Image (cartoon, rainbow, N blue to C red; front, side):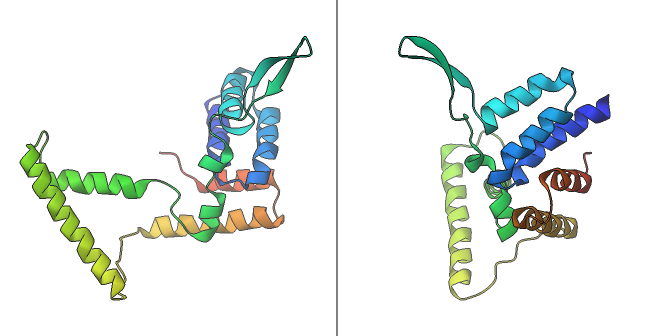
Length: 182
């Protein structure tokens, strides 16, 4: 029971890597394979992220239902192209800055003056990075070996589904096997 629930949720999470054209096909597969007691979760994801909700409208005196765009369309959350091109798929750069700034400040609830001083220090660090970049120096960021291997695997899988050499179902299963949940 738990494994089936985990598989359905994992498939929902994997749609971020599906090509735009394949998201609806993948959603159809999920609807077919998900057990009945998980239909609420599947419906929620479909309504908010894939197809959108139905709205009632009056047309020529008759009540009709029309599908509205989803609240968060695939163009916002889909990272298929970013994965293939090796670009950032998350907002980790923002999180990294927040974490670095927190360590630069050194404590909670700093005074306004210490925040200003820390912002000036951070600005100096950024200016140094920009200067190094304009000189042609590579600004190395630490990336774990496991992360690099995972990114290459994901890019290869995304390329296969984009070229049509892999079906959406096979793609979702392959991506699901390559992700570990702790």
